[in-house]
Image 1: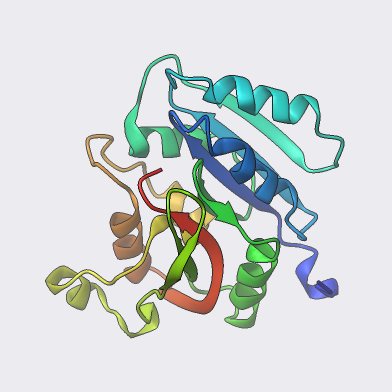
Image 2 (image 1 turned 180 degrees about the horizontal axis):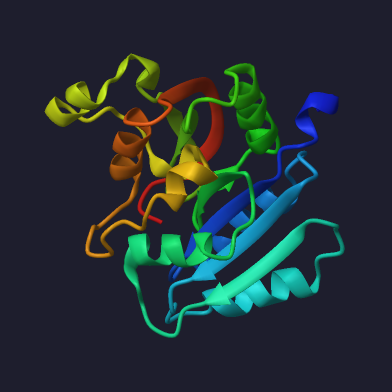
Length: 217
């Protein structure tokens, strides 16, 4: 994908959260290594997996010969999704941060398409949420997952009804995540970060399926 000179100043990090996903994590990792955006840092944070997930991660990067920067972290104890997310973010250096899960697959243009959307929006919005494909546990596609039009949401509307979206398709600004960590007792981070974005520069849907979102992985 031709990005143009205007894209070059944006440094991106993708945070891959893993936990007991031995069967899927290599495909998830490879989809990030295959991203067509060059200035991409990949931060993998494993939340004390009990299966062979960590070994698959290590082996994948032993064999990696590319130029993308890779940071590996393994928590000594299980922190939960939110705790693991902010543990990974603490070592990420990107201007924008992508969320990825160890059982999902990102399309090769995921990062470049989201960054272009952010630049086209004047670099003002704090969260870009792409559409995705609904993927069965076996890897078969079951249809589309279309994010709600987040640009039409306000915080007041969010307080009354949550928009449909899924965190594994999100790109966020560093400033949104640097405000403070979320309570690690929360089961997930996505709706809370959308609410935070609505109070800041806003959130926007990218109506393009860029993630294969696996059921039950």
